[in-house]
Amino acid sequence: MSSAEYLPFDPRVEPKNRLPAGTVDCHFHVFEDPAIYPYTANRSYTPTLAPWEAFQRMNDVIGADRAVLVHPSVYGYDHSTLYDTLAAHPDRLRAVGVLSTDTTEAEIERLHRAGTRGARVNILFAGGNQLADAEALAKKIKPFGWHIQFLVDVSTQPEIPAWSSKLGVPVVFDHFGHPSKPDIQDAGFRNMCALVKEGGAWVKLSGAYRVVDPINKWSAIKPFVDALLNTRTDRLVWGTDWPHPNIPAPMPNDGDIADAVFDWLPTEALRQQILVRNPEVLYDFPAFVKR
Image (cartoon, rainbow, N blue to C red; front, top):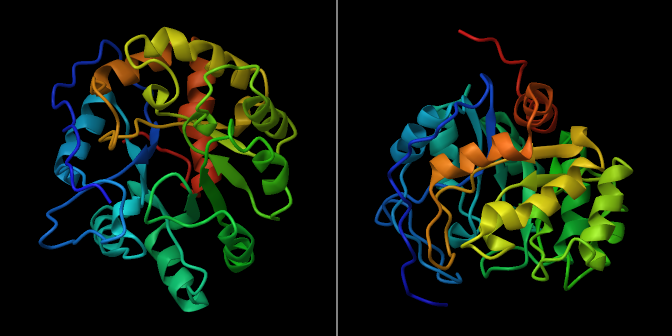
């Protein structure tokens, strides 16, 4: 476990465009005061402080009305931050938790009532699940209509998409499948795209800087976006990945992240589907009514 702290998020948020009303930021984390919410000893990184208030300010500026809190690996199986954040913002938020194979039905029911709609299997960072846990977790969450969200490298494990299709629950791949080989012809990425095209998986358009050269990220990631748009647009969602933990410099700017959406999704119809309607289906949000 590294005790190093990682880059703080960029507090400047000045987008040129405003996202459509009802947009859901489908991937963010919060890192509150560790004296109140301690980190697990078994972790790969120690994050910098990134409280809810800072996230809310950022999301308000870019125009995201709703969001999905993804439980980070540094908290292990302790969902205290998740419960408290959801309780404070029940209409605005849904969540994805991290379950152990010993998690009881009663605990899953409690998480569900709080607004959790998926279980994350993170095999890239310490503190998460192992891939073998997914089969047991799928059986536990299926009665609740949840999905399994994978943080895996589809390049190094190209068999994962086909394997995941047999779990019997919807599956979601973080960050374009997090391929360590940034090539749209890579077998793992192509297998993931094939599964999406069949309707067997969802993919998050998030964390471009985790996949391609962070200096040229917006142009370099465009072929990946286009490849996914050629599968099924009703199986794609988008997220900022705020506060962008455990990444090398430079720290991305969230205004730029939001503006990239207008290049990736050039029509209003595409933006409505991927930013608003698809997340309502995947995360069980009610249809958005503009206030």
